[in-house]
Image: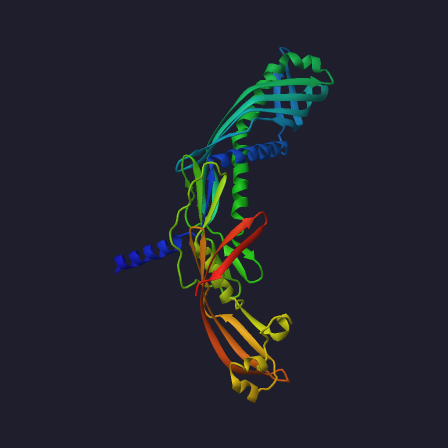
Length: 394
């Protein structure tokens, strides 16, 4: 019995795991991400608070105690990070030639002697290497820091004001401590920034409203797939009715998206995406309309009245002479779309209920027509417009 239950659980899991949306980020796209990451890193650095540095310098006749405070990163420069996919893991990021220009204040005391002024601090040739793991957390993309290492090429300090000339010979003592202070904070700062980024990712809504009646679920159906040249996401891509969300009577099928090296980002959708939207609209009672005669242009040859329809059904002229008619047109089942190379096929099952409109506004049902129609056509996205042409097959 337990074997049967496990087998059914596997079947259920497999059914739910087929995505309707797939997106692939290529190496070319990753290069563009690295440019955006450079801007993000510099923005983060400029808003970073640098803590005070306390210490002392032995000058032979005693120790001069100092405090370096109010340090702010005034300027930073760097080359674009080098980013590469790591198969089965995530992305490796290498930052080199990162330089920082920092301003701050210094204060000293030696016995009863107090002094102070400003300083300029330059930290150059900082190198950072980190590995970021990409995964999923409750259906959302997650990002964590697997490893991090860093190095500092050099530090230069210039003191200004007060008896700064006195301390300049001891710069080597300051630079060593400042260099170590920056070194021990680089990787924790990166881990904190990645953690904050991950928190923001977990707050992204996974149900996106699409108009008044339906929403789209963009939960991940599996963990991101990372190869040595791409990053692929499998997304549920199913529409639901806001008023009565339910699963459609059809399921998603497996499909693949072709990797195109010259594209930064590829997006592919299956038939299930469109068909689930049609089912969601049907469940929301949206796929229906009441057609009245005043909605038909006067120049149109056919109008909704018993005089014209009486030519087809003579009893209408006798029972309801010179009266308007109304048509309630609705989809009786979900319209289904299927895609072939360059062609879209649509199968529509609909019904039209005809009624007579009495002078007091009451409707008298007459008859119903069931329609089973098939259409074939093509669609084209031209700039910002979606255009298409469809023909009735039967």
